[in-house]
Length: 479
Ligand SMILES: Cc1cc2nc3c(=O)[nH]c(=O)nc-3n(C[C@H](O)[C@H](O)[C@H](O)COP(=O)(O)OP(=O)(O)OC[C@H]3O[C@@H](n4cnc5c(N)ncnc54)[C@H](O)[C@@H]3O)c2cc1C
Ligand code: SF4
Image (tube, rainbow, N blue to C red; front, side, top):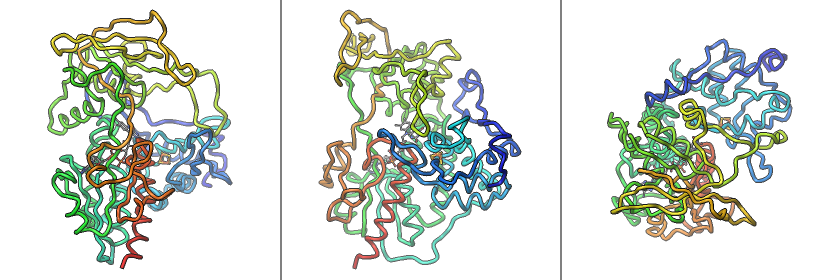
């Protein structure tokens, strides 16, 4: 523990953000950084608890609190305070191969379990994590680590999201020959084509991909498994195949017809916007439009932020659940309840001085003329005995030119599972041996969202690393 009284002397200081009204003018990242001296003081706030809950990942009332990667948080906080940046990096990379992603997009499950938060404010663990890895890149510590010995085993990974890249990273480090197949033009999965640029700049992904390629990992982009390469070709060429193909099957909304011009799935909208930015085109699908975003969660929030930047005339976000109360304080270290105001909603509030969300509201039916969207009838309602029931007389018409469906995901897309005859769970995810990653009696494995359902980057990495360990054992025992 670097400074015994750090948690008493220093208060929490978050990384600053660009002002919402300024950042709405571009697609640049909205996070800024503290200066070095301030950051080291934030490291000194860690109390180095006897039982560090921050790295525990315990489940309380169905929700995990603490880091799923079991990052050695107190150790690297101490190294930050002492200015030992190389040591901090070494401790961080022991558990997390990609801290530059989690350090930007993770909802910081660790901070909810930080003991400082019991009687004050948690340590800025996520920002500290980002500081370690960015310092390492700046000082040239991040160099390719080519394995000294190669095995003769070949592994195919399907999907280049955080799960697939974690599997590839870990198996390559074991000496196996790894090829990642990705259907999109560029690698990264939802890191690249889901999470918007302003939250995670895409050069941060590219920088890492260069290192991985130099370490010997082959990444075949623009190659859709099942279309450009068949099951029999893969089976013949590889000793193990790992499915990390995500869980992109979107939940449909009753009363909404996707065939109507002006209705889109949120992820397709965000992906198209990211493709435009990639080609240096300014994304404009929402320009001058009245937009309804169906879904009050994180994806819906990303859509609000994107639409505001594109110059939408009006943005309304619908949430079926009631507005969470900020009155009840959740006991530490439970995941806190209460209304979350994410960056897109913050930006909307700065612009219009109220929140974009309508709670306990959804779409009842679309209004369409000559297959063009004119608007939608909204209804209010609430949950009664687990069923959402409409309040009589609550129907209200809202004009709209664009409706984005961000109502969550319901498992893997059908095509790959069907082509490979993969077993599915009741949640429509790939079914593996209980508590493991191997698909029963085969050389197939699964990790990430396609295995656990739509989740978080940190879980995709955790699953990828655990799965790689299992694949490595399988390969070692394979004649
Ligand atoms: C809009 C949005 C915003 C999000 N924001 C956050 C956030 O801020 N923080 C956070 O922690 N999590 C966030 N998430 C969740 C997070 O992005 C996912 O949990 C994570 O990316 C899952 O990783 P994965 O590798 O399992 O799958 P994915 O990232 O979905 O990657 C799967 C990859 O497989 C490829 N693929 C699929 N089929 C084939 C095929 N047949 N052949 C070749 N390639 C194929 C896909 O093209 C894709 O690149 C967000 C999700 C969405 C949708
Ligand atoms: S990966 Fe997420 S939960 Fe783990 S230490 Fe980093 S910010 Fe916290």
